[in-house]
Length: 175
Image 1 (spheres, rainbow, N blue to C red):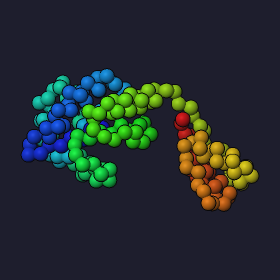
Image 2 (image 1 turned 90 degrees about the vertical axis):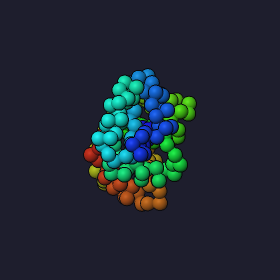
Image 3 (image 1 turned 180 degrees about the horizontal axis):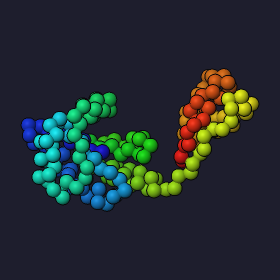
Image 4 (image 1 turned 30 degrees about the vertical axis):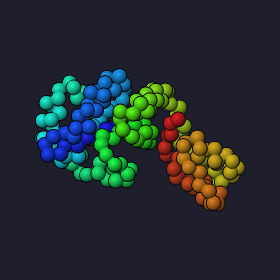
């Protein structure tokens, strides 16, 4: 994801400079989705700008009409734009910085490669809470970890069993 903005009817200069780079990345990594986000809430103005660029802006552009991008930039302490995030299939942010940095493409490449690897299904926990309580804590911890769930500390074994059943009793996790 790359953040763009339109100010005074013009796309920001640094964002326009990144357009060829982001277009090239989209072509190089078609399995990924590059999304430019404008914080200008005028959808028609953004659409006209994107259309005027044609194939030179050959990636998805979204218009943030609700201000979610502003909230994200505040929470992430972003000082300027353009700014890029590489977001994994599980919505984990793998990278956050300027899209021209070499690390951006490397993290994008790694995310694409990881997404293409076959995933292993970890079925829902089929044991009852009572059956889980009978297992050693070490085994309960392993069940949390194999699903990528944080193992709660400082709780009783019964609460561990209940939490595991609640979080993984009806969900298939993939690794």
